[in-house]
Length: 237
Length: 237
DNA sequence: TGCGTAATAATTGGCGCCAATTAAGTTGCA
DNA sequence: TGCAACTTAATTGGCGCCAATTATTACGCA
Image 1 (spheres, rainbow over the protein chains, first blue to last red):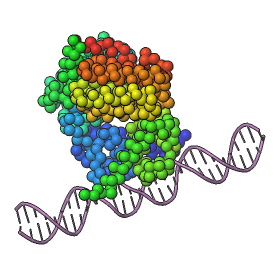
Image 2: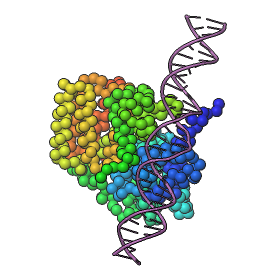
Image 3: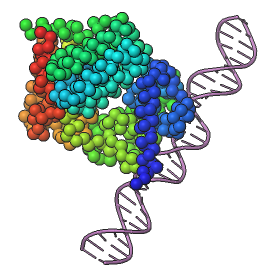
Image 4: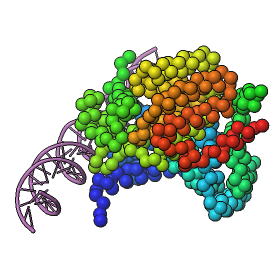
């Protein structure tokens, strides 16, 4: 059976939004750069209306920013927002670990081990993009097993939002090696079904990826957890 | 200085989306009900274009659902999604507590205490809507102090999404009384800066609100947090 | 030459019209 | 009377046009 012309349009529009989002993910459009509607029309062979709908969708998803009468541009997030996203990611991704441990199958863990190994190889001999893609696949595979589609979706939405920063991940080779170690440690903790350990690794993993190379330490985060952490320990004496 | 006509339109459109969202929140439109564009035009005195933009925004935010050639309707979520939302809410809202304790001022805590008292009054003598509004205000005030706008926004977005269910909150008077007790317990824990206790109350609070009246126990949740519960308290000994 | 100002070009964005589609109503036939 | 096919009515949604707005360039004056 053939699909109706209208239904096709709806699909095309959703796909277009994802294509543009993908382009931003791949850094084809840099933070602060304007997304000119005419260019997008040609580049993606879409009508102006579809382009506008896609841009609006991305704006609602906060991937891009809308300035009236100026257009849409890749959101340039400030440091405070950057750290807010990081802290929220830590809460979500660490919180997902309980579900992952409860639901993941042993075979999936082994596939993760393979990916962790591939990342290690990419660290020494791969391009930045390869590293990024394998890293993405690794984390995708983990959260795909958290047993909670809503949570999974939120995690990816947040990861997309954090791309709007000019901060480059893995600025140093040290950081790459640390990431590599973390991945293997995660696999190991998964095998042992050690939820607290997993959560702790994730916490540090995100901290390192999003802080190390800016020279900004975890202690300077917006949501001050050093204080709360201390109080957590001492308060109920 | 007068604002340009175009800028005004943009503001109007965003406002319209929130107005419709508010109407859904107030249950003026029930889950499964179709939102006819012509009705909305008249009801909110807006152009068809603005209505459509607002509906699209709400659809992206998953408050409503879009069916091609049929229109938009209040999303009717299934039980699995309902529980997924609940589990994600628990992770987010419990996770926000560290920030709240770190950032909230004593005066704000006292304002919370007042609201907790008002809720208690409303339980015995108020309407369902009053109860709901005071409850909302109470939780709003808490999360407003978590020091993380991104986290705060996500919490409210999720709360909006969970309205699409037919499940009525506070089905029993028992549940209302339990909510009331929880609020006071939260204020008390806030005063003592007891993060783990606060998180635990929040967890149970959401569990009760979203489970009790369905007759479905917390043990049947999708994301199994019973394991992480023990670990989170003990993790940084 | 530098700066404020006016003309010009480029871009966004509002919206009305009508085709496509679905729902409701009606008729006819077994 | 029940059901199916057809007709009519109601609703959604695509999109092109052009006004509103902003950016750019050119110009004139101190």
